[in-house]
Length: 205
Image 1: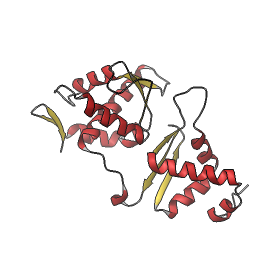
Image 2: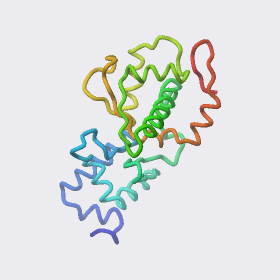
Image 3: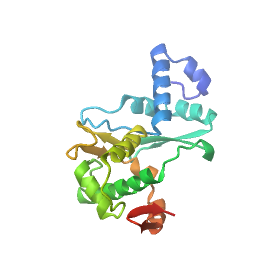
Image 4: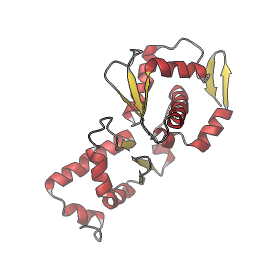
């Protein structure tokens, strides 16, 4: 309907409810970085994702005004937004980055194990075991620090926790395909090559 209009013209023709939905979806995408179509509930898709997908041209133009690039990764069912200016990009600390490496390795393992599925669920206890197996950490993990890191990854759209607290070893969480965008395979290989274990703590050079 608005294909031939620029963003300001198209937005002016939105109904009030659509303007509110646009504002909500744009703010949410800015907050999370990665917006997943999957809600964790197999009976419904994320409404903001569907709205952005429907109004892709308008959202793309809107974010371009902010110096940001919006991409809809159809094969992954993920929408991402990235600033063109390095100084504006979100920073991830070393510990969180190492957890992201482990999450990416777990995701790849599970996808190969259950061919054709992009649903990767894992228990805290099993993931903590993987952290040790991969050499990410050899020390006893602080569940408080573990919870901090995992919550930060929920906020950017990488994980979704099921019912239960993060410090409960039986709590499960979903790893979204967005992990492959946060840590692409080419960067992951370089990361693994640079991974060393010093005094029981994995570090990245």
